[in-house]
Length: 115
Length: 110
Image (tube, rainbow over all chains, first blue to last red; front, side, top):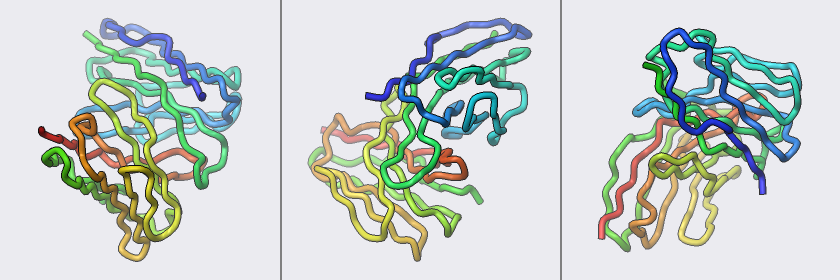
C-alpha cells in the first residue's frame, strides 16, 4: 500500500514563527503536493513538485514555500506564520502522468493552529 | 466560475435509500474524474474513478460521466449511516494535480 506520512499531526504555533511541515512517501512517486483545507472552501493547492528540486505554485502560494531535496520528501514552510494560516494541511503524492487509475494518495493531515 | 462545482449540502437521505451526488465542471478537455470520500477529521480516500462516458459500478457505488453535459455523479445504493461523510469530486489538471470541488456533505439517518 502507498503510504504518505505527515510527521506532525497537530501543531500550535505563535504568529511570526517559522513552521515546517514534513511529508514522506514510500512509493517512488514523482509528484508531490501540498493542499490546505478549510470549511466551505474545499481543498486548495498550495504548491506541487514533479521532480526533485522542482516546484510549481498552486492556487494559493502566498505566505508559503516548499523544499524537495529528495524524491520521497516534500516540505512545506510557513516563513512567518499568521492566524489566517490556521488550517488542515494535506500532503499527497502520485505518479507523474495522469490517466485511468493513476490516483493521488493523501497523508493523514496536519492540523495547524496559529495563535 | 469554479472549475469544479458541487452542492455543499448537507444531503440527507434515509438508510437504505439511494444517495445521488452531483458535480459539474467547466473544462471540456477533462478526461477522467475521481470521487473521494472524507470522514470528519480524516484525509480523503479514493472510492471511484471514471474516464469514459456512461456508468461505472463498484459494489454499492455507481459513477456516471456525461461529457456532453459536463457533469459527473455518484450514486450510493442502499445507503448506510457509515456512508455519512463529505464526498469530493476532482479531475486532473497539468502534472496530474487534482482540482477539487468543495465537496458535498452526505448524512444518512437511520
